[in-house]
Picture 1 (cartoon, rainbow, N blue to C red):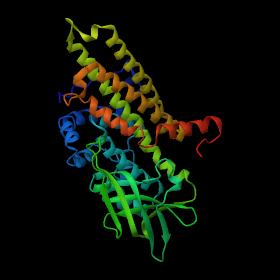
Picture 2 (picture 1 turned 180 degrees about the vertical axis):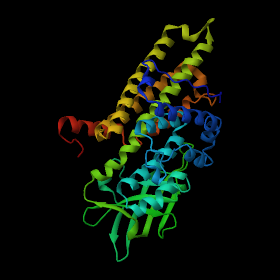
Picture 3 (picture 1 turned 90 degrees about the vertical axis):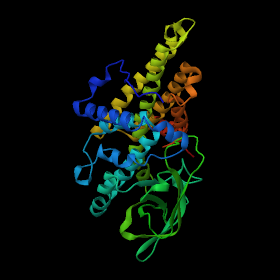
Picture 4 (picture 1 turned 120 degrees about the vertical axis):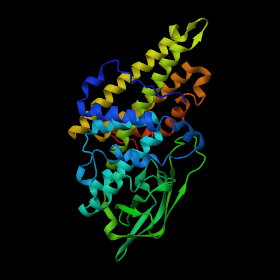
Amino acid sequence: MKKDNFRSPDFYSIDTLFNEEQLLVRNAVREWVKENVSPIIEECALSGSFPDHLILKLAEIGGFGGFLPSKYGGAEIDYTSYGLMMQELERGDSSIRVLSSVQSLVMNSIYSLGSEKQKLNYLPKLASGEIIGSFGMSEPNHGSDPSSMKSHYEEKEDYYLINGSKMWIGHAPICNLALVWAKGPSNTFGGFIVDRNTEGFSTAKIEKKWSFRASETGELIFQNMKVPKENLLVETDDIKDLFNRLNIGRFGVAWGTLGIAMECYDVALKYSSERKQFGNTINSYQLIQKKLVDMLTEITKSQVLTWRLGLLMDKGEASFEQISLAKKVNVKMACEVAKKSRSVLGGMGITGEYPIMRHINNLEALVTYQGTDEIHTLIIGKKITGISAIK
């Protein structure tokens, strides 16, 4: 793969909207990606291997739960800074952003719902990368509809008995703990912190993926799993409590896919200035210029969208539906930009010399990851009409 000489497109001077700390975080992560991710990621994706040596290095730059208080191992950065971090990590590769965002999703859930003892016991270890977490909500037959989950729990004298399974879980094969959601006998939902050595708990790796090649994805399996009562995170009868846990993950995807689009545009722009056909560089031809302008236009619109979303998150005003819209819009935008970039590169676009095809493959997973396009459409539709079309 060619040397990473990425330059961020900024046609509307969006950088002037970020404060000094936010730009410092972004620039530091950008350099970290250039040094640690770009030189190895193509080979990791081709071989389907997870770069686990980056776990502690990512922890060192605040990549795990950086928005949390320092008391629990966080860096106390704002959500916009976190978003910029996701943008830069996913520009490197989706697997690296997933490593950060899944860990942060687990941490945010424990921070928001857990007891002080649970926070002090788990959060610093997760922040340092000493332990890796996974978030178990999706099931083999229930992805978009977690309210119908089949994993269930029963309360016993001094433990909870859980049976079921979770599918498409990031870090499942390598996790030290899993945050598991299950249904109770009275249609309640329980969140449980499950340690790797818990009796009845096992994991399986999903093989032969064409997407997220450098990420560990798998299944969580519960067979008469006994979870100590002290590991109950929350018990609720409101499904919204589960959905709200997903906000930080979807926020990260919105920013991360912007990073993919920016990378694909930058590669196409540079390639078109070097590649010659019919005696001229191809960027001198109208059709190529149109593709470049189309890419830049969509990226610029999404830059404004994500900046505004970050501002709303920092104020505590971002709604579930606003986050859904940003995730939906930016994934679709990145898919279109990546395809246009690949067409500018011609045959070279499918080779490992450039990151385009790797990003295209990852985007195929992101279309359904953290909620399908259709589900996000219906979430927004309910908000603007007051009528739920999800039956």
